[in-house]
Image 1 (cartoon, rainbow, N blue to C red):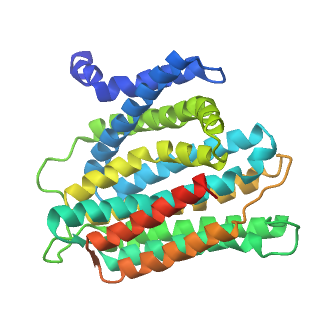
Image 2 (cartoon, rainbow, N blue to C red; image 1 turned 180 degrees about the horizontal axis):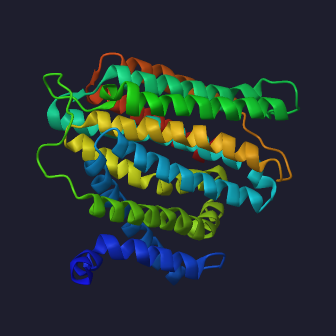
Length: 366
């Protein structure tokens, strides 16, 4: 048994997550000097690549759409834990932390990841093909969740400012969990074929034929290492955030830029996995990852912060400002036009990437 495990333990994809976990324990809650920050950053990058590897092993074992669901939910659960932890630290900046993080995740996934995936697939294969039924259902769920949780608080009048009252927040939390649960049931049980990749002839790909699926034991080991790697990614990202904050402040940039950078780091595993799928002409898998991550970010974060607000002091600001609402509305409209045909060219990918660039530009220069 030990002899069989030794080759696996020797692989860097096994060692790096364990190293990230050890480094996280040693550095948690401490001020890090520049040299240590550089080491942490290198290990963080390695943990991201290891997480993508193990996610692909699990995905190959369980098949789509379960594989993309595993990575999206795993990253989001850890991200939610990080948000609640940071909110518990208190401070005026924590009031908008949940809103800023969720909106950043939506813009990164729905424009950045989707745009890159469509661009890579269409440049490599001529057009990017996907299933409009499944992708449209995912987009509709994301749009509804984002509107209920991030737009309505700006217009409600029960409390001053862009906040929900306790009853409204409870409704938003229950609605988010309900919609997310319905979507997962649709994706994995009743209409699973809507979320599977398709061939150039329009046939559903039910299984990958190029390689034998890993054993159940190998998949379980990869699942455990995936969790360790993701904990390392999020925890180490939090560890380097003070350095990022100092750099942002020194550059005279708004504090919201810090949240964007942290969100980009946390979502790196999904981004890389989505681009790899797009290169293999599995665009539906890429879209499952992108929209599934956006949906999970809202559907799990809002109930978590609603529960945390029971013991946390201070306001919970969820409502978006006018500029961000315009970007969200434009993203929903453009995404709908992209999804309807079931195929995309480099133009659609470029449009989404321009929207993502606009979000970044407005984060830097509001």
